[in-house]
Figure 1 (cartoon, rainbow, N blue to C red):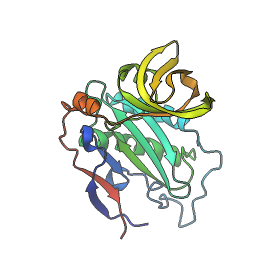
Figure 2: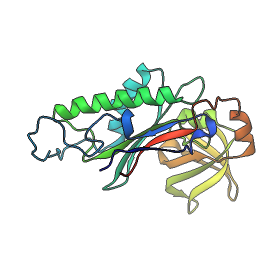
Figure 3: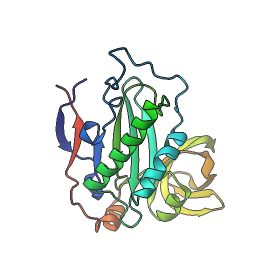
Amino acid sequence: MGSALGQLPNPLARNGGCAYIGGEFSTSLKMLGLKPPGFGGKPHVYRTDVMANEADIAKLIEPDANALGFELVRVKLFGGDDQTLQVMAERPDTRQLNVDDCAALSRAISERFDAMEIEGNDPVEGAYRLEVSSPGIDRPLTRVQDFADWAGHEAKVTVSEPIEGRKTFTGVLESVGDGTIALTDRKSGRIETPFDNIASAKLVLTDRLIAQTAPLSQAGAEFIEEEGQD
């Protein structure tokens, strides 16, 4: 796999965010598809009892994020044979990360995972890319507090168990109480569902949302560094 770095416009830059995908800020040899040192040229056999659960991976990463003053927003592993481990975090006061923040968190995660790999306890099976980013304006909503913080804004919510025969709703977030999320859907009106029934949710990009987040700094948000082709 090539390790050349290229610069691309950052789709997360709308709120002063940043993203690193692979590259020099992901130091794990395993992330780049290379064999760790000390194996005498023999293929590295990854353990089959690896930590494939995203929640477990998040528990590993969260202490490093907190130590740097960040809150973890989302950890997602996707891509099948071409895996990406996506880590979203933010500073509580600004709801964003700058370039240096992304670099610091990426290094901390890489160092922790490298140490676990040396001990034979790989957190993720097989080669993968590490992407560290801020959430972006139209951010995912992953915690109960997210729904409370962004009440009054539009969101797209997908549920696991259907409500009135539907699984996807788009409308204004209304309230949160006792772990129940309320939303005024464009078609069905007000719907309520337990937080545990939410499969995914994200804010919808609107003029009101852009206006509310406009004061956030755009500094250092122009580029991502991406592992490219030779």
